[in-house]
Image (cartoon, rainbow, N blue to C red):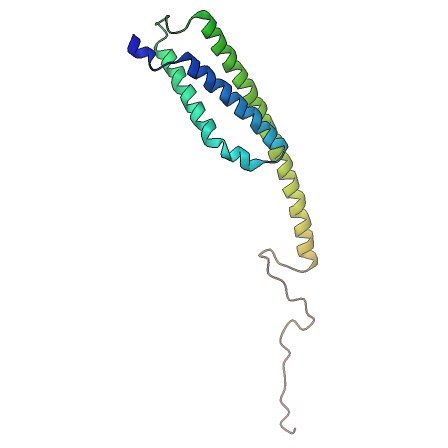
Length: 147
């Protein structure tokens, strides 16, 4: 059983929960401040923490019959941290959805303006300017041999 305890460390798991919760909270502020690059910078760390916590959950499920791994207080703290993580993850998801919605609306407005402008200067759908000259075709020239 001591060998199985090596795979689960309560202190490391609680630190991972807290760090992931703080990263998600920071991401919410980055979204509000439009600092998308900072969100991308922490993506690998968030992914690693989520994978680590998923493996630790599997370890706990596998060792559920071993009651000496966690006492009641530790189990309660882990449950509370899990609920807090879910709360902030859902809140972050809502903020990302709102930001995506607003960006989509802005892009739709910009597209409408660009389309209107493109039509007013006679560009076709491929972005090529239409020939709007009154001389659309090359005028036919007749050579007068008498000259």
